[in-house]
Length: 336
Ligand SMILES: [Zn+2]
Ligand SMILES: [Zn+2]
Image 1 (cartoon, protein in one colour):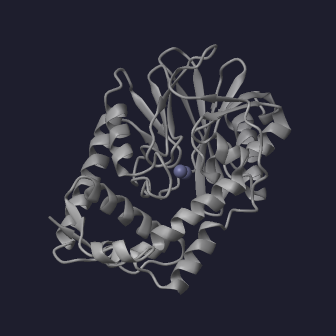
Image 2 (image 1 turned 135 degrees about the horizontal axis):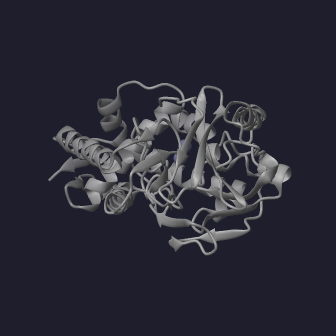
């Protein structure tokens, strides 16, 4: 991920001023939070809520005053929109609420992540366990990856959501919500005049991580590609502002690149399945040896592509007798 530490000012076609605050959510990992100068002030995303993240957010507000002369503080925020249920975006909501008393809104499909954080993570990890066993990993590796997946279990104190949204104009605000599931079930892009806050749906350099819908409903590559089409079709946009990295000047072109990237990865995956292979084997050939959390991300990304191809009849499971006989055997895929 390319970190962009610049604090930037944008003005929407309707004259609303927006500031991008680069917040160091985790060491070396920056999340873009946006201050929108509406009445009341709107904040998009809250970063991770870790001590360093909160300090980084306060520092960004300080820079806003010192470098841009904007007399606005975190305590002035009246509402906080969360773009999706990943901890580097919502984890700081308790801090924001303590500092400002802001009302919190999130898409209805991610509201339970905030309200029942631990439960949702534990259930998600259970599905991940089934997926990793099917992928062909050793028990030792599965154990390590499951522990890794739960690393944030005790980081966040569950919080009450004040309002949820789904799709369309948010009454009493200049914002319009587009539900764009795929990277996360409740992923949204938020429109302000000619600006689209693309969150983690479209980024300027990297392609957001994908995971199979088998683990969590409304994720998966099928939903993601549909959501890319949806964003591509929005007329009248002149700027995309992502949840990480730089601004996106030509959003339709970046969407096209992202689609092409996944099409190429799908073809490559298909090409690798000339004989029966497990997701573990396919992942190794796609990504090589990965370390730490990247091992898990590689398996999830591979799983999403294999699932997409399997659901569309382009890959078949060749060891179906095992599936009939055993509880949760390793699945072997081959192209049709
Ligand atoms: Zn995310
Ligand atoms: Zn993110």
